View 1 (tube, rainbow, N blue to C red):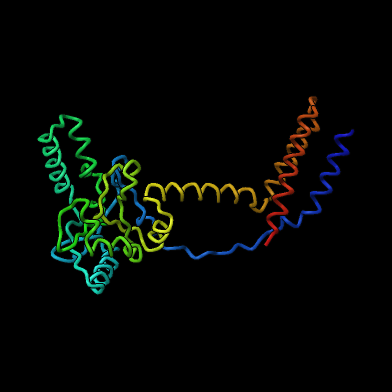
View 2 (tube, one colour):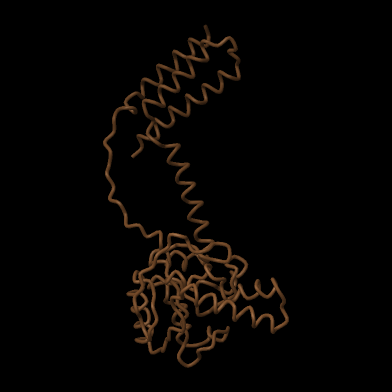
Amino acid sequence: MRYIRKFSLLIGLTFCLSACLSPMAVETAAIAEDNSWQLTLVNPWTTIPEDWTVTLEKTENGHQVDQRCASDLADMLAACRDAGHSPVIRSSYRSQTTQQQLYANKVAQMERSGYQGQAAQDRAATIVARPGASEHQLGLAVDLVDRSYQVLDKKQETTPAQIWLMEHSWEYGFILRYPADKSEVTGIIYEPWHYRYVGKENAKAIQESGLCLEEYLEQLTQAEAAAQTSANLTAQPTQEDWQNLLNRFYTFLCSDQQTEQAWKELLEQGKLFLDRCALSQIP
């Protein structure tokens, strides 16, 4: 009998919030443009998606990039020149064949340097990505150098054009993809010439956070998981939720094993239900 009285009390409290279960107007949100392509991850452990397609647009000196980033690239180079510098596109989109040749050349160079077999391949892959694992094959990456110094080495960071690009590239949706202190995360050596398009909003967030792309994507994943958890806790309870709760109470009352622990668990479920009703009404 004591459980029946307690149950009756809980039912009374629940009906006080029955308005929470009334039909709600459904807000129709505009479908945002799908910009997920901007954050497509390609690195030594993640190859280009099988369904990836690219429509190329010509830029300077015969180079090509994905047409979706071509305009921002042109704007960035123009702004750099307006600032008095001389940026040059050293490399842009690469086909699978081109990437295979570049990688094979680098493996051969590593072998001449004393590396052998798998060691030569692994070392080469930290400098030139394996075919299928290069951002250049996405059409979203460019190697930019200063006209006065076009060697791809650390000295590139000291050139006037590169200094400007490192400071301003994010304003045009590009990030320095392989920072000096992120090689363990990216799997690629420091490259003060390799810029990757991620869109202006993402580039701004990455610039302000100091994260590399891998870290930024991980942060986004964690934030989305937290948001989903919060949404589940505050979601508008449905008639089905209410019916399920009643069914659990009914099963308990009809059971021959009405333990104190089982009752406490039911009370906790009822409390969570009431909390969701209350939270869903907060504007």
